[in-house]
Image (cartoon, rainbow, N blue to C red; front, side):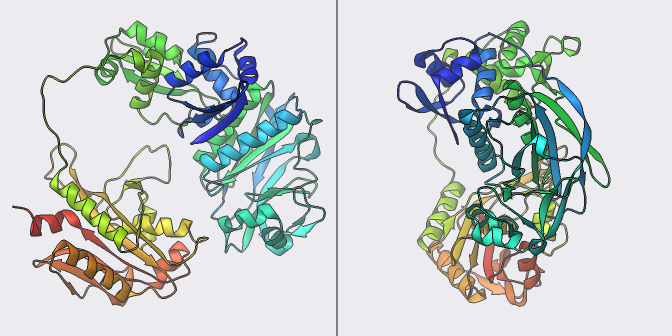
Length: 559
């Protein structure tokens, strides 16, 4: 969740009309947003994690102006072509992408600068996962000589004065001596070279995602024109960040200038303010929300949520809409339907009792999964919850195995997500990778679903399978530790088993096995080999196991 610190005065300014606390509270309630604090003027607003475009008072005001029908429909933004460009030269593999644009005509004061820094930090923490997915930099435009180059150098070859520091130091010293450097050093830990922005005069502008230069990377109340950049591993996500900030700066009165980002194999123009096209069914809206509204009423509601209607592409049931370019949360038709519900006001939807009366209870297999989770906790493991959607890279290449039959995802908004998981262990490795800055030992587990292709399943041709997995990461983690925990788990479940030799390429050849229950293979156990640990960048031994608990339940407890 993101907290927006603002005031009734600031919100009233963005709306162009005075608003009371009660009116604000009512609008926020309709949007599903909570007020976390109010002292008579200042207000703390807790925003939902999907609406990154509302993490600023400009974004909040933009949405509210349409909602209370001051200015409905798709907001229009003008972008002017900047004559120069940013060149990408030999970036590191882990941090290869960049987006950038310029803004002219801004008016900064101390409060406005604090506001920009607050937005930058919130987007960095939430959308960019505390800079692990990207870093953001803002610079006075007049101090930069174009074209700008995004490149990489060895840490000892990087020398500049970092923000709020009294002298020049090397990149290596920044990571060890500067407070911000120490805080974010783990993000690219182990990399031989670090990302770098350099202008055409040879001036180092910043070392993303760590810190800007004090000389050319600090805005103040005299700054009117700025250069904005975001860098990271995923270009799609960075474009979303750039679009959100472009809208914010435009709403602050700035004029947006797009820049060409010249990669070795392509040119990316940023920001991209083209609207997002979606289709929505009136019939489905009425079915899912439990209301009965006409096509014309739906169009009216959509305009109050910043959509435009493409009348030429509409039918009695299907409505084609254009959504703002800064919306990062429109993954599916259901997201548009949710906006219709908010505009209609969920309070106006009358709850009704179903025509049948039933008494519900959890399925036996669900209870079995809960029991397994409780046992893991008792054994000192910490529970994780990871996504079913993942990447083939994580599931197979990182684990040193060939691709297995799996369900692929096409046209994914996030290009690093391209499949559904067939086993959980790779996702647990991802958790270990992201938590190397925490103390060892680390003992984690997950009880969850994987998706297995199955031509015998009608329509979807796949089935959900519930599995339980665990990993132990420590300086002395080995096969015996994994086996001891497997013994404890299955003994408490009352399941007899044995371990036979196996040849799984993720494990050490002599420290692994397949888990057998009633002559059927139900899982794997082992100590992971050096190749897998190197692929994930894990520096301590890791051991673990994975069980098909649906199979175990059917073999041992099903009547």
